[in-house]
Image 1 (cartoon, helix red, strand yellow):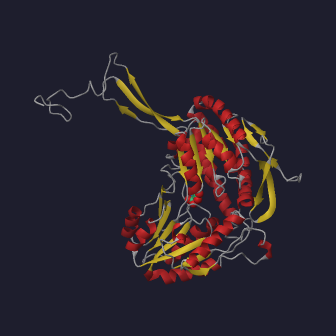
Image 2 (cartoon, protein in one colour; image 1 turned 90 degrees about the horizontal axis):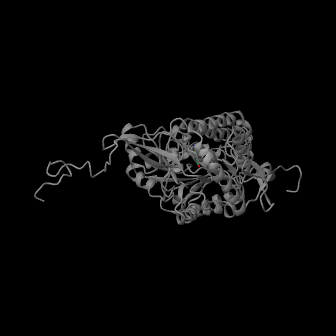
Image 3 (cartoon, rainbow, N blue to C red; image 1 turned 120 degrees about the vertical axis):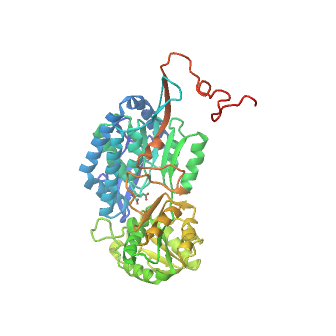
Length: 514
Ligand code: UN1
């Protein structure tokens, strides 16, 4: 990292770029070739976070006082800048995170979409106006920002997910401190530069890079950060929840998934194969929405599996930058080892190994974290590989006699993020839409590909009940204020002055004899 050709990036605090207090740096590397250092980033600690939070806190009253439509205009400008710089950002995503270029463009497009959506919220931000129960009294509700929002984001969508959080937080009048994943700080730096260029005032947007233990933890503990939004593993989510709970913080958690694709006897099997391949091995299986299980009825299982294996074997593994690549590297050596370990656990528990799970022999790929996409058949739904999140290119096939058996198999996991059903029968589709207990349900499409104007999130251990994206995202970053205006000129006592007279027989009225 002493190489002068390696760019060095600091933190954005109060509108200026500065190094970490420790003066230390950490490298970001290319998953396609682990030897390649892309940049050196500020290795921040509690002091840096405290400074960023203080700046965000100072900036918040003026930002809150800026009319929401004006705030929205800055988001709109930012969305335009993102679109203008889309290719540059996408290339950064490819080199830092490893996904293939087409998907990296999709990642940035998702950031653009949420920026435009939330820009519009600046002119909506709806509350309610309702009739008071008393005369000459007006009643309404408005959303209020919480203050400083702490955003802790993952590496798998290094532009989309930080913006899923930053855009609703900002348009609602909060200021932010973003702590991006330590694997993808460079993407966050580019985003921060564009946020500054768009015109967010100094202190409104702060970026602090570093590890979760050193920097993220302080954000969760800092008493001046009333709301934390985190996307990552369920394990880290639990730790954050315990710490944030002690301070009664608002907390939005977006955690793992163990998503299933159900295939009915009447499914269009070719379409199902396409959806399964894309959902299981797109982004190298590193989406919280990735399909990790296929639950197929016996009648079509052999045909489906045969076709799946054939197509999986033909998937091209390679660097994301190569347009021919379909499956890029995993994020790190540890992530590859984790997927390999789950393959071993599945085999040990009695599943049949059908294909994949090898480190490619091609010497050109020797220094990247590559693994060929793998399939296990005959997986017991209650076994470890049938239950635990892998976050890599490993698909488990679960065979069931019929759809009645498929539903409990799909639902009996700790997670509840996404699911899908392939069927050509309308009644089956509607039955499954109701029976599948996940926050996202797809019919005749895979488990991935959520759009930004609908709520995104999962049931059970996939989160803590909050949703990102859509109007629902505002719920994380605002609280309700109910306002009553009494212009009657006299004391009016709700629930007392509007009680039914005794004995008038109306509901709630007391009859004289009692
Ligand atoms: C994630 O996997 O963390 O629906 C987010 C999808 C994407 C977002 C995935 N739009 O797969």
